[in-house]
Image (cartoon, rainbow, N blue to C red; front, side):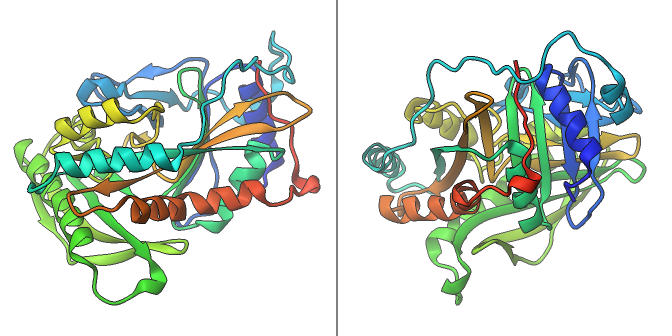
Amino acid sequence: MLTDRKIIQAAEKCYGNAIPFAVVINPDEDSVLFYSDYGMTSLDSGIPSGWKGFIVSTFGIGDGQKPSGIAARLTLEDILATEFARTPGETEQITELPESTGFPYYSNTINLTTEALKGRSGKTVISRIIVEKSGKTPFEVAKEYFDRFTSCFRAIYYTPETGLWIVATPEILLKYDLSRDELVTMSLAGTRRITDGGDWDRKNILEHNLVTEHIVSCLKEIGMHPKVDEGCNLKFGEIEHLCNRIHATGTADPMSVALKLSPTPAVCGWPVMEAYNRIKELEKHERICYGAFLGTADADGCNLYVNLRCCNYIPLNPEDEGCYIIYAGGGINSMSEAKSEWDESYNKIKPLLDILKSKSNATNKTEITKQ
């Protein structure tokens, strides 16, 4: 897993010198992939033929998601052997940190949303943040987090535009096989504790069905032929979600499909534009990468995931603690209750929060700062 000292040293060096990098572990795999380049590749017009690298976008609509990539150009050896002008160990000066979302504001936001959706079948995904300071470095946090969620797509990455992020996401946006013109995606919505068991309630079923119907509609609009598999429960720690995998055949540019599917109703809402506008109006924090997509591509195709179960790291100073901004959200419809949604979002935040609050393992501690 994330124990190779050369990978950590190379990533630290990249971060310390503001060089884009990504360290990636695919679901149910142990091998660690490293991507780095001196600059970012714009992917607005699609993925170049034969291009290989890491892909990241920001939360938005259509081209506003600004997809870009870190080409697999610089190797570990390239990074470790290069002397850079900057001196790792000096952090940027942070003048103002965001505040954790308080329940009164969150509750008012939920109430405004449910009122706007009264008597309708739409939904809006309202997110909140917890801002947690910790003496643990990002690589300590990432290692613990990745070891716990081995069935997820896991990445720690940095770009000058997004900053440093840690993610372990269970949700596929699309897996596209270029040789067969086939893709796999999933609808993932509805959340409950695994211990709840039994039948899913009407609120969660309705939320999930909206996501499935939207994805199928999007695929048909671009000329693909989707087929929805039988539903299942997808587990993430102590919670589970309703899930349907969706297969589709047809010819399309993978990035065009991604920009059509994202942001999904599972992280934005439905109708998508209405939900997006409500999010921009009501949420005080910027989502940046939360709810967008990320993944990898090569000559065979691409594997993209929804950027969930993630946090953004902000360095404070090299001798002290850093700040981790953890994101989580929930689908709000006319039947939603603020306290229930608050508790549900906490269950999504809890795994990362527990890691940040636990004691640091000094033997694995690394210094990772940036100028």
